[in-house]
Amino acid sequence: ATYPHDALIHGQVEACAAARPDALAVRFEDRSLTYGELNARANQVAHHLLSLGIRPDDRVAICVERGLDMIVGLLGILKSGAGYVPLDPAYPAERLAFMLQDSAPVAVLTQAATRQCLADVTVPVIDLDRAEWPEASLGNPQVAGLDSSHLAYVIYTSGSTGLPKGVMVEHRNVA
Image (cartoon, rainbow, N blue to C red; front, side, top):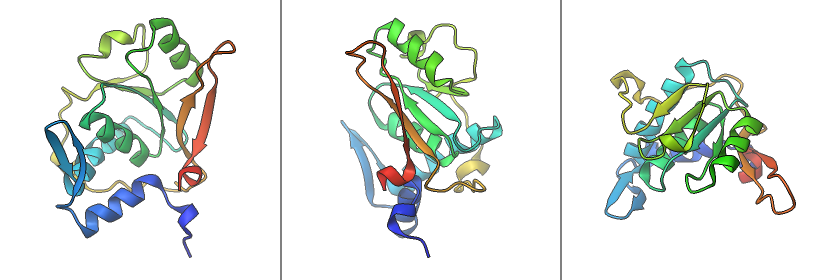
């Protein structure tokens, strides 16, 4: 039996997309996505990350402006089995550099407007504005062995007492 605390975050969205694909999932300003659209777009991101060799508990940083692409990116990272590391493009360059070095992501999702915030990134950078996804990548990815004990995200403290500290959160902590 699967208990509620064993659920994967993205599994909840997949269930909504299967049950009510035309229902409104997210709205930002004058743009919106249905559950079906959100799920399909996130699947494209996830399949691309999986093609790069992403595995459960890997970390993928995301430095994008608030909006629909942020939600698509976060969900795509989760669907790939990785945990996301949110990087606010408004942060000072030194803080972003520290968080990138400390979290050691295997890839970074960005946009044209935020790419310049990330200097000297040596891992693959996926530009959500420019990415061309194959049509075949619309289905929900199946990541073997992924369960609620795997990493969902790493959130950093404010660093008010010194350097920011990363806190790792598992899927079951959110469920």
